[in-house]
Structure formats: structure tokens, C-alpha cells
Amino acid sequence: MIKAISSSLRQALGVRLLITPILVTVVIVLDFIDPVIRTYREYKVFTDGFHVVLLTYGFRSDILSSFSPILATLPFSGCFVDDLKSKFARFFLIRSSYRTYIISRIIVGFLAGGLAILSGVLIAWGATATVLIPMEREIEGMAPTAIDGLIEICFLLFLNGGFWSVVGMAMSTLMESKYISYATPFVFYYLLVILYERYFPDLFIIYPKTWTDPTAWPFGCWGAAIFLLEMTIIFAFLFAYRAGRRLQQL
Image (cartoon, rainbow, N blue to C red; front, side, top):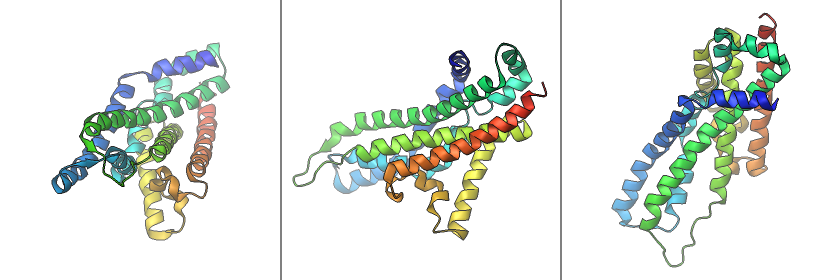
């Protein structure tokens, strides 16, 4: 199993895994431009902890939430289709089992999607802190913003990335198209948004924008994390079932 996971990780470490964090960083930073300019024009100074407030806003923004289902699928969600077309899956199964192949793909798919989003988030955090902290000034009577909530949001973004990656993998088995694996999570995201905003406004758990908001959940960050892991397991089982049937036909 360890060798299978290592092999899958090497397969995931490609150009797309390197480019995706950069794209995530660009999406976040572009969302920062307006509030930074507006704040500087109005106050001519940034208060102590302003970068934390800005990052919290950016990490929970609509634009990052909307792009995450696409970006998270880029590194590894199309791997199963590529394995079938290149006949890598057939050669893999000669030396290993169906179970090992499927589990290793699910684990690496989850990690690749989660780390792609998290890496971009951390790059944006580092760049924002480097630029803004020297410009921040402490104001008497105002306590600096704590970063505890920001760390929780980063954790939830990692789980979001892993979830969307596994969704893409599961969908790719239905039509054996890696382009389906990239597009379906995005469509699924907007379907959930429409269902929530138009028909079920009280059913907050189906609203993807609350999946990065610990304050929206009864048990905070852990409530959202447990829900995301449960959803990930459901789609992982779907991938395992569909992929297993397809592999038996080889």
C-alpha cells in the first residue's frame, strides 16, 4: 500500500500541482486589491492585525469558494481516466490488487486537492503578511486580531480541496472523461448554491460557502470538518464502486 501511495504521489507531482497553488494565490490576491486601496485612501494607515482581517475575508470570499471546485481537481482528479488510456492500470494490477489501486488513488486524490488549495492559501498568507505587517500601526485601545480563526479556515479549505478532488474522481468514472472530472464539481457547486438560495434557505449544510465558515456550524470548525469528511467518504465509495467494476473489465 505504501509503495502504491508513493507511486501515486509521484504521478501527482506534475506541472498542474505546481501551477494550481499559484492560481489559488492569484484568485485570493486579486480579491484583496479593492479593500486594501479603499482602506489606505480612507485612513492612510493599516491597523495592527489588518492583514489577518483581510486574509479572513479573502479565504471566505465568494470568488475563492467558486473557483476551488475547479482548481482542486486539476492535479489528480483525471488520473483514473489517464491510467485506463495509458494502460498503466492494467500493468499496476499485475503487481498489486484492485483494493490497493483504488485506496491509493483515493488517498492521493484527496491529499493532492487539499494541498493544492492549502499551498495557494499559505502563499497568499505569507505574501500578504510580508507586505502589510511593516505598514501596520498599533492603535491604543485596539487589540490585534487573533489568528486562531484563520488557522481553522485554512484547515477547512484543505478539506474542501480534498472533497472536490474526490468528487471529480468519482464523476470521471461515470463517463470516463477527465474533462468531466474538472467540470462536474463546478456544476455540482452551483447546483448546491441554487438549491440553497432558491429552495432551502434554512438548510445551511448544503451551502458550500458555509463550508469555510466555522461560525456557521453548531460545533464550529469540527462540525464543518466532520460534514466534509462524511461527504468525501460517500464520493470515495462511489469512486471505489465504479472504478472497481471498470478495472474488472480489463
